Image (cartoon, rainbow, N blue to C red; front, top):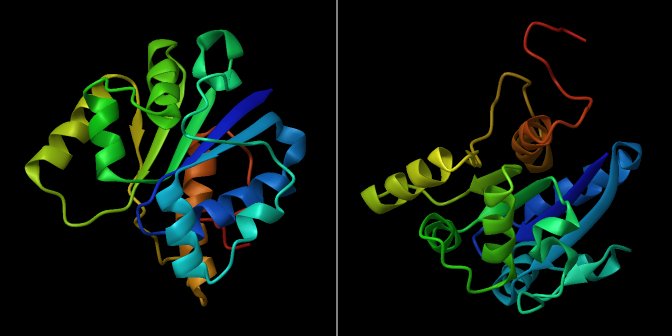
Length: 187
């Protein structure tokens, strides 16, 4: 059973973690634990982009980026999946260089050292060479880089449907079963 930590950084794209949480709550039978760590910048970006503070409405454990006593700050906590959505390039850079300066980067370090699943939904564009090399380093360390690049063959009609094409891909990568558009399946 999945033990998941969702980290939310201050990169633009607050719609992604909101949709991720909402979809994860709909498939609660597929996971045991869901914990969230959200940076102060992420809260500010959420408020700016979504015009709300709905992250306060979720009945889930939220952890401060300074809380190194969180259960996922150690491999013995046995969290097997970490999703960083959105993942800022600064966060990715700290992960790539092993700088565990906050709970997000510490948890990512733990997931990588334990050979568990780390999914980084990078959102920035375009990439510079430093970004590309950091993505390579995290990939070589066992992480998955999943850019927030939507697909359009499902013919999404709303911004939520466009963002859901990325969210559903991340949930697939996490090993969760989600009902979504599948190529070659017209249903």
